[in-house]
Length: 305
Image (cartoon, rainbow, N blue to C red; front, top):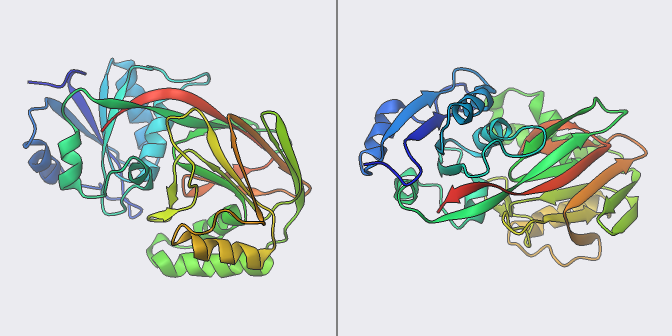
């Protein structure tokens, strides 16, 4: 027996250490609880999931199960999308998180337990999921890419850049060093944010462009974000560094909004520019620099829930 969407392609991503998120024996043990017909394909190097997802869709795959966290899903989303949108808008996907967990799945009301995730793999119910598209504009190197959960331009991007220069094994210690290093050296520029029919001009400490609500292992940063409403949740943090610290502290309890130093918007298109370049974090890692344009691509795939 198989699912209503055909044989499942199980794409297994890698941990930051370069190892499969889950071993094949564990995956077989989990999927043995279902009646799914499936094949397992495991990444061999960083970025592999993008190519594997693109190839799977090209070969007619209608159901992809990803194994891994948000960055694995990020890679897969960039494989199932082309320059204009989804390669197969009827594609169905489902996720089995690993040790890193998945902030995106938290937004959908799911936890990070693989044993619980496997219960969502069968049956017909699904939910249409939006994807964010980023276009990097000159003088930055032209190009485009997609994100599934959240992008941030400013202080968060600078922290991501500093963290990316450190060994992955430093873990939380590396994140703390990057956090305080950015707070000490980052200079808040003035800039402009254009949104659909509205705009903002002034100091930009950080801009959150969110499709999902959670980040950093469960911090609920974008309270109004929903990855199926056709909108991006935009938070412009226009205060100083002390205000930013207060925001991040209160966000641990979801109590940072509303705030006088944060402007909140919902938009389908966001354009960010500043007098000095702002580094942009994309789904938890450094992605590029401003100026950049963020757009929502509605209903890009269907998520099994």
